[in-house]
Amino acid sequence: MDDSQQKPVSKSMTTTHQSEKQGPPRRRWLVRGLVLLLLISLIVNLSFYALYQEYFMSSGGPTEQFEAGDRYATEKIAIISVTGTIMPPFTERILKSIKKAKEDDQVRGILLEIDSPGGFVADSQQIYHRLSELSKKKPIFVYMKRMAASGGYYIAMGSGEDGVIFAEPTTWTGSLGVIIPRFDMSGLAEKVGVVSDPLKTGEFKDALNPFRNLTKRERAIWDHILDESYQRFLNVITDNRKNLDYEQVKKLATGQIYPAIDAKENGLIDEIGYQEDAIAGLQEKIGLKKVRVIKYNHPASLADILLGSAEASQVENRKQALLESTVPRAMYLASWMGDLPGWQ
Picture 1 (cartoon, rainbow, N blue to C red):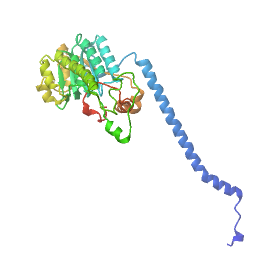
Picture 2: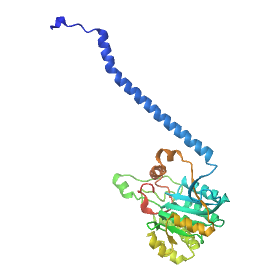
Picture 3: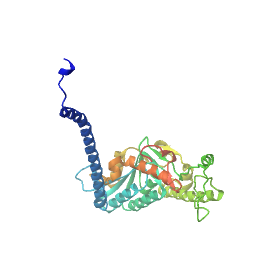
């Protein structure tokens, strides 16, 4: 068939063909837009859900979850769990759990479950203080899981002289001491031509400036601050470990980590065992044949929902480390734990 015999293509057919080509991309953009709106809606609803929980449930304290024992028993053993770095907002959750256990007359004993490398000095002291008050009313046993180092060991002393400390065979504990993280970037600053020249109202206002070396007077001040926290740590252990005196504790407080068998030999713990062993020992202590073992849980925050508590704390701490690198923060913390996931 020659060209003259071909039927002309109508304009309407050409337009229809072009629109068919353009149709699929338009539909794809529509689908993408709907998916984006769905994601935004999901995030907004999760935010409202978290705010609702925080507003209406925070005053009521933690909820109880059945763990072991007789589900229908009236009298209870309460597990208070300390996991990850001891720092806000987790400190407040622990304090609320302690308060609830203290006020609940059905709670006859407390198992303090620790899996922590430590944390802030002030937060460790707050938890220790509240546990010490609680131990005067109700017996507290301690169960150490993977790690109970530095501030994690400090709060274990809240169980008092009569408290019994259990640790798993693979538990690491110890790291008794204090650290103030500091980076000396003076060499780097000199290489890139950065000069630190802060405007300040006193000689020691920028004592931990990372872009210059510490002066002798500044180092003396911070040594005094560290020693005050260090001596407090030593005295807390001495007061609560009846088999150890001050000089024995001081010899152990080198920052060294102790595996469970060494910790027991040195008097830092009492028994090597698992959670069920600690519960059985506590149940025998309070003299109950039937008991309901419960664990305190807390409403999830928005960060918990979106990221999970471990990831959220890691992100938050990295952000703080970047923005507040010159802010002094004394810590009862295992210093080499900084880069392990979930231990930030």
